[in-house]
Picture (cartoon, rainbow, N blue to C red):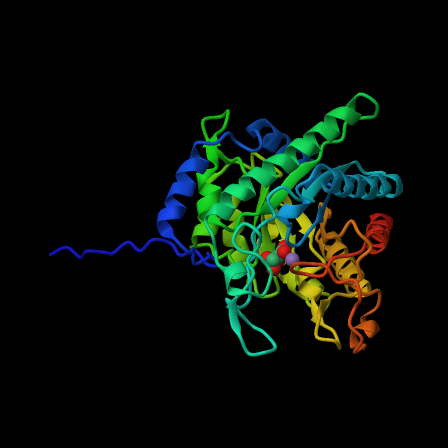
Length: 395
Ligand code: PEP
Ligand code: MN
């Protein structure tokens, strides 16, 4: 007698409950027929740049929104964000002497993983949580929070418009100054959208044409789940967020599944452990990886491990916590003979007050006045300059 084994499909966490599956099917068919948003050669160029960063010959600065809004997909706003990114990168290069690879959290950062599927309003009403503009809208009404498949088409269109503005900017400047490209990255969270935009690349493989750099979040990086399988199936440079609960064994499995020794820069590990955990936990991960750690681009996300609720009940972060994590990240890598490859920040191009300068300010019961983020607290332009300048000085 032969045993029959039921092959269960891999799980995908953090997927929306769409209002209509029939409509979703139509939307995905229409996305499958659309032109790619980015081309495969630009993705391969970015892999090579990330490879240089992994060797310590360049540095990746990745900055932008936690949750990008569709309303920001206009030339004026996109140019303001690109100018901020390039100014920060120029300052980084001036101080550190390293070439800076410039990447936005932009042109597709429209989907958010959430800790809770619902949100309870102050009057007790329970609503589905906001999951990013590609899914629903942040306003606290049931209509706004309904997950509409048609939003995936808007995500495609707004990402396309944003990428066109970035490309025109880069080409326009190329005649006058040394050409500096703006790469686009986002979290590959909505698997149906990402899959619908997979296209053949020049080497007989397949790439995700939704953005140059695709990363998998800390909540969806389980090696036997669909997000990691998706990342393994595409040729783009990919990243995985590594939080304080990632075991050294899990990280080793991810490196073997997603890394490629012949293509340094293919895999970035984006470490976001928090200022308390960074040195002990990153050190134990690096010890367990041994030689395999050298094939990876190590990027520091000093934001997501340092999110706190302030005295007024708002999500905030303190610049001194952010800096402490960056310092721990650099020292743990150096102790293992490795080079920091990059920094990922959540930034606003307007002078918001969402993050504070010192952890002591988090105790204040007075609400932060200019809080505009649809999701996590972002560094103001001044705070971002400070963090980048201090990081450059460390290297
Ligand atoms: C993010 O980058 O906005 C995010 C949700 O990060 P993480 O997956 O690390 O929590
Ligand atoms: Mn975030």
